[in-house]
Image (tube, rainbow, N blue to C red):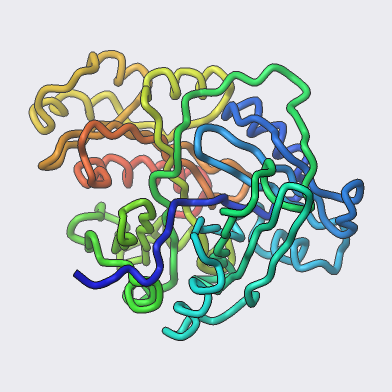
Length: 364
């Protein structure tokens, strides 16, 4: 067995560049049950931007806004709308991670550097991936503070009710025409990932639109990145719509795991989160397809939760509508009961649901 030259311990955090971090922070606290744990801004010596750090289970989101018109953050938001800038990977050695990937062809963003405070030190380095998204390697073995130096403790100002989110299951990227293979190979050759699954337009298509997807994963399976590209169809696909409104490749959705999807989705719906709609007809034959499940079908139907099975078990999943005004980034809520796959049996129903939304926006 070949040695994993880039051991990854998990997703360290996901940083969004947003138009108004204070208001976005309120949304994620109220709607998704994240707790505010740390803040960076003018009050902490950071003069040109503000960042709020939110946490639930093992998930950490950082919401960042630029304070000046000419900042890279402000330009990013003007071009893409609210979107993911950094997919940060937790590693044991940020310097080695940088050297190994750059040697294999990664385009560097930031050479390894160290930041420190009274709680210790964090080492960081960054490389480019698709679009303007970057991967930051975070080494925090010599740090015992809340997040990292430059941030101070902040707490939510109202009672936060977590909704049972546990960790990042996978992050999906949308890339342009003919770019899927290039980026799948980038992850294999540069980061040492392996190809897990491939879906083509025969797997994922409707009468009008189609996409193709490859899923890559790191050595221990903690990190999974599906990469989508558009495929030829009669009309504009969801991937094309994303690329048009995001102005290029980027993170399409983040799948977050829960141990009780019925509770999680009930709470999200109560708090006003919108989900894609799947018609009742989906449930008429779903048990014929997936077999016996622990949940009551009526409960899943009421909440519009989808089910799929693979050789190792089954999974339950549901997709939010985009969480900002542009039809770009959204969330998947997923509960795995043994299944390692991505809900291939639901692709058709999902695609049709997304097309209905596109048609309402006049973008199909």
